[in-house]
Length: 366
Image 1 (cartoon, rainbow, N blue to C red):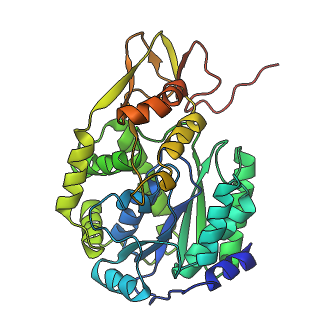
Image 2 (cartoon, helix red, strand yellow; image 1 turned 135 degrees about the horizontal axis):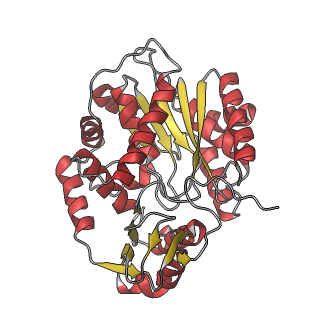
């Protein structure tokens, strides 16, 4: 896996940075409902790290394609531009492609086209290649454990893959830590590229609800585990909002563009999904993810990172709901709803006895 990661990284430019400040990043194994690739870089900056973040688009929403929703935000940077952004704000978030890990980007597209994203050994090599190419010294990994997870469907398989990542990273001279998180249900209520920006604004403004705040604290914890790899490092007092604003300005966008996009998302018409009976709310993330991915297929859009659909969960998975309760609010035009509304509605189920719910690890029968 380490050898393959080097081959992928060697296919393009490899960055190197000075050790003061040290470089770090937190990657993820993919899956809907987490903001870790957006929030963790901001907390790493608060902890004093420099963050060169090389990424690929998410399905349905990853860090780089969420930032790509901002007017004039430059997602592709050459080496000189990356160094300029890093010098300006200490954090650059850029897309894998022709210059950086082009072979990895090609392999990732091929894996997506063949439904082969969930092969742990290839996922390990792909993630590690991006850390090597971007000059990261300390790496964190959010291993999202679920049936749709790229590191395995269960915790034992995911733990083995996480161990392989850390060992392979060590072979490559990168200190790494992997944290297994439960991705069977959404980690927070804002799903979609635009909704992720709305979630960031609520956190920056101190208006986040407890569910979103819990996820924010988890992302802060992931960054803290990376910081523990370098005990000499001390926090430099930055705030997440300041780190975010400095980055988007350094990459061509602005605070005004962010506020404009957030306003557009927050005021967009939404369709409420209503509970038709009482019971426990169950969310089928695979069905929901499929609807988002299909709706936002790039080849059917004039924009690079389409954002045709978004969803805000109004109740948590596992919550007991009454008939008539609002379960979620969906953003999407009539055409989008006509194509994918049934799948979105079907992904939110109310049942008498769900198979699993958050904080209930397992159910055992004789």
